[in-house]
Image 1 (cartoon, rainbow, N blue to C red):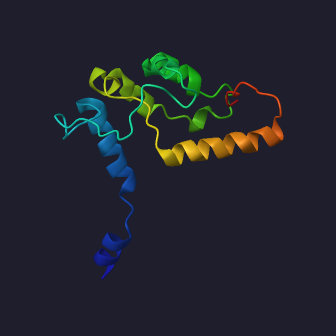
Image 2 (image 1 turned 60 degrees about the vertical axis):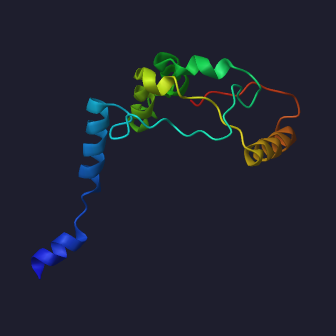
Length: 128
């Protein structure tokens, strides 16, 4: 009974997560599906601001600079694993913004709500 209880209650998610992360780091972001391209429905060359500036963030350094917390308080919670995947040219070449009608509607609603709090346009603030 004791062995069955241990088997039913053990928590091996950390080991599995670590193993898959190590596998991706050693073998690439698309391990097991190297020939399968990303499926990005509603792909668009422009971001939500109708700009192509998003492409600058395909550079790993630019993305790290944008997302890395400016305060040391938040650094213990910053895990750049996904950003590190931008080292792979095969991933960078496939990334592009997507835009669905639902996303456009949600973005429009958020802009309307923002006008209540900030009546004058403002530049998005970086997290600190």
